[in-house]
Image (cartoon, rainbow, N blue to C red; front, side, top):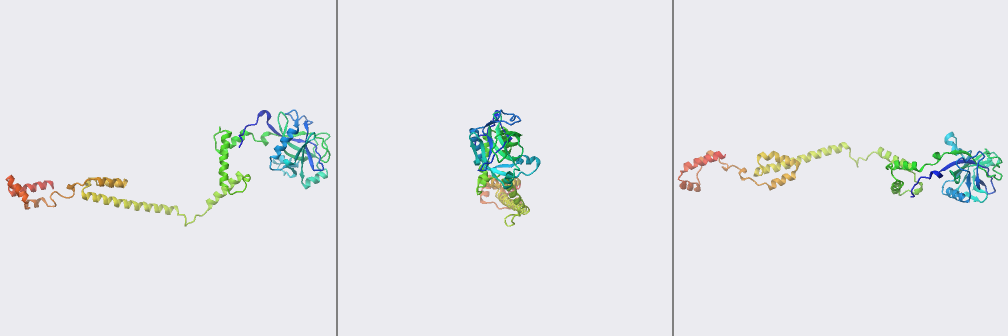
Length: 377
């Protein structure tokens, strides 16, 4: 995509409506411009010495018009330009294309027009006698650069103008100037609008805008790969189609076999959370009770162990796996025998031997043993 640049101020383009006499020849042609330089009888154009039409300008005009796909309209009294103001319809009197233009050296620019039946009848009955083309010219030089349209009219602006069926006198008169702002878009304004549409910074360059446009075009082409011709793409049409799709999705009724209501899903999630909590509490309880029974946890550590299990069950398992069982916590030092029973217990052979070595009677030894057991108990 070529880089967009602003038009030079000294050679800006302007649309102008110009009336001239024309002739129809046997091939059904009309003469749109004379050859050479010319002015209107009222002194126009005001922004150039004269209008200029030569072979080089004609080649440029023909190339300009040939690049356009749509035909150029010949209407009645320039109603195409005035319909927006007066609200009246703008029927066509005839049509011509860029390919129907030809330059005749020394004569001017001609166009072969396909007249509508009503227009042909008006011409045959001399109800319309003149042609007024809408030309695009360059301010300062007056050089004609293109065409906009033409109109059948009865306002003979130049003395001596022949009618549509006679040889043209080849004179122009500027009858109405249409400002550049109303018919052309300034490049800077176009860039500003593209920045807004593409959500780009205010100082984004033409190259950056072009790059974003190319990305957008690529996405649109990928999204519409099954469409026929890219030339028929319409952004408003695409946006309208997307609106229809969004509305259809909003109004669609979900399939109960494929979708679960939010309330049901919330209830299931709550029930699942409760089951997981119960399962976790059971696992923690089993670990803590087992650890207490084998002496890997002190009774004072039970609350801490349960909280650790709630926050990190794996860490609790690791702690208990690495903990050493305390033998004293597995049972009592009296092996389940009460201190009172120790007094009457029968001494073992080893205890009797200790009594003989120490010179202590078995009765005193039993009392001492009972006292120590009582203290430990």
